[in-house]
Length: 360
Image (cartoon, rainbow, N blue to C red):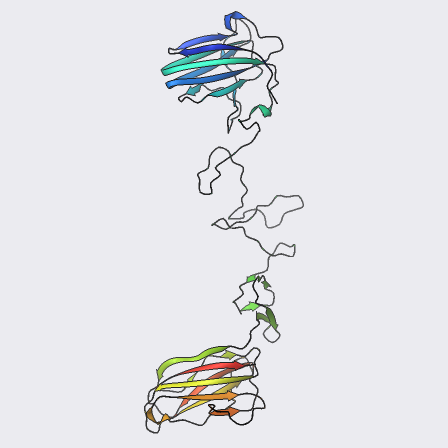
């Protein structure tokens, strides 16, 4: 849309001294149907000026500051009537809407020169006039992610600390949630006012009310005894006892069998007291979740003859004769909860490690 201008005039032409000018110039009245004025203000030569825009309604009236608004500039402000300050060479435009019949401009100089031209217009003042060179009404801020705020940007963001009521009614506006680092927070809900906990994919300590949001190829299954969800696992191997010097019988931590029928137990001895002292490796089963344990197998005690050595046990239902390399076999099924116990015959120092491998 083009602003319909009636005519233009010069108020100040490169003045270099404090000057007052009356508008309409030479005492003429506004052209027919004109009711507003657009001023073009340009400073030069390191300008430093103040400009008062004043008006009165009749010849004998008193001049007072009148409203104006900056137009065609990003971040245009609302109507104002304060004294203008011209301290750079930027060409700026100001609209004096619905102005009184008599205007005067008082330009007070500190340095530089000042040029002001004007145009009459009959355009009714409306918000569309607060435009930029792009020809549209908008507010804007920086485009860079880490730039400082500027102007009056309308942002898309969220609240780090949600302080609005827990419950909202239909049609109420709620804040979006973001982390302190600016990441969007998305929570699962059934539409109520409470949210379930979100469990990590590597966390087995999840209650049956925990919501699992897992985008990886890791399935979850419910343990009907513990009433908790856990990851679905395949065959695995874990260290039952780390290598260390020991002088007394030692139990591994409580181990959990999830899908396997049997077990390999590998005892590795790297130092022993020699003589008649022996070690015996035992697989123990628990049927109360790890409170009490009973011997499931009992390997023959081994003295190792004072040197390093290994001992391999195998537990599996229906197993027959021992295969090459297997020192002890037991035909039995591996229970859900078990542990490995190493029994010392005396107080000599042994250094050994124990690994357990599940057999599907």
